[in-house]
Image (cartoon, rainbow over the protein chains, first blue to last red):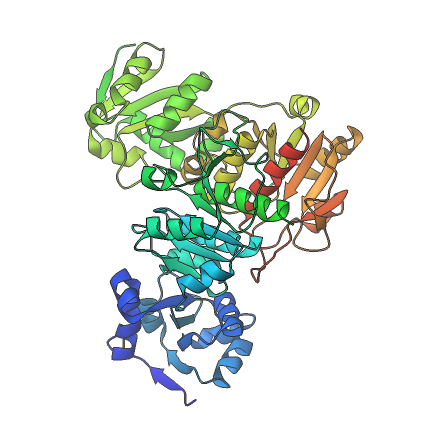
Length: 266
Length: 266
């Protein structure tokens, strides 16, 4: 690919990339922004979803910087050399590393996921992008097969979420639902064990007999799982609190449960 | 206690409280700032460590606001009614809830902790205050007895850490060490099982036979446990990564291990 240089922040390619800071534009164009060598390296090896890459010359002096530029130059990905002002407009952080990619949001099929999954994580209106990203990272790492998000969840493709997920979003399907109750009905028909994490009125997570295929629901940080969804849960599970702390961080609770579940099913 | 009203941001009591935004002042005065009804309620019931409380009149309209003011008025804690400008100077958040406390840093004894503990978490140079706070919260919730921090760790009493710990810092001893290797030696003499979380060259955490008293080391987010400390670890333990993600968030990894450990020892 021929490499282009962009020096103006009002260049249309730059403005188009910076537009992806807004959720509505990420939805419209089905693209998101990914920053940094590690995440971009991960996505390069996982998929063909990178549409273009912007770099500052300083990236050459960062470990791995020259290598990844070389890889991109031998691929079909558009590469733009930009000034630090242009990079700041595209990046979300105050001191960008000097490498940004525009990545296509993968198009996952819900029916395929339900057909081929043993372990599904369902997140109900998680609001904090750091929690969402950490849950995506832990789900992928613990061996879960996919993640379903109920309406009203934070955007899994926001830059904060993408940073916390450290590339995992390229390796595990994440699907936003419009009709959560219908999907739970389908899972029930497919004999999924439907489990809901609850602060109370549940049995201890260590005493449950887990049987895949299963779905684990984690609720909103403040209000938990919506009552309409909780009513469809076959088993409420609780992590016993042994001290005076009343609850765990939502990402921690979900991660403790996911690792316990995939460990006990093997 | 007689209640005072403060309207000036240059009032010495206000300046003294706002000085606690800096780590060196928290160390000098052995105090930290705690924001919000929930954390202050927790600390009120746990201990006598609150030195004074600042409130804005709007706190009356927040659920629980009137109650907690009533409790403080019947205690020996100094109470100051302040303007929203004064509150903004003391608080760390952009939209403070309207209730801030100055809390004494508890004075914990290392020998007592080593004598009376079954489960100790040791954090080696954790840098992110959110991770540190989440680890403190999870340690307390999972039934760990105390937390030791190596030199160069982020301050456990910074406002970000205090927020992530949600009051747990009042319920579990946190001790900053100057001499980590000596402390590990003492633990060895006391027959502690010394475990270190490692990304590689460890055995799977589910196959270890845990025997209290034990100490679990979690390393720095980027570089892991320092080689000098890792050399003193009796067993490296690893959480197997089942997907393509190469590592977990440090707070998640520590939490998964702590819950697994206290669950398997009971």
